[in-house]
Length: 148
Image 1 (cartoon, rainbow, N blue to C red):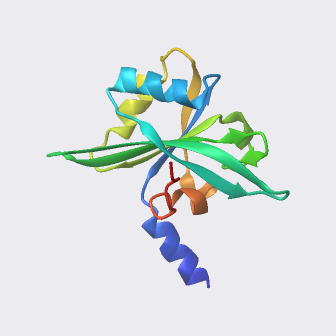
Image 2: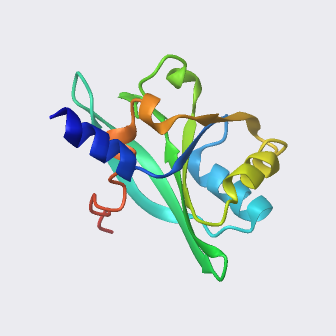
Image 3: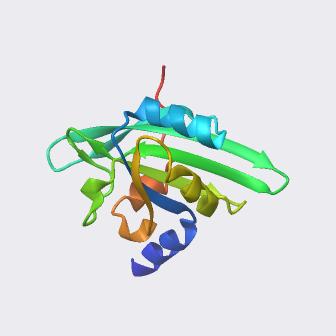
């Protein structure tokens, strides 16, 4: 089934950023909304199967479309008491993952604007295929939203 894995990897066209911050998810979303003029809103709680049980991770989402293209941003709580989303060496240092499906090329600019924000320790670009989270992130829109 190697061909299926390669096709899946080719279909996963998004940027992935790792972010370290002491802020809780709702506060980080608010800060990003203020500094980047986004409108991140609660999207769902992502349940990840772990070795022992499962972990729950808050996800916020922002969508925008303009004449330059469309963009969808997800801010995913990486670390939860029962586990992590990103399972790679150094992944435990990432409090959040920022997933960008961006046709406008704004991801690089966003890194520069996020880095000096209050409450951000650091931000860096990650390889989605090496993150250990690809299977959860690639299907973000397919997995049903949480019901209120």
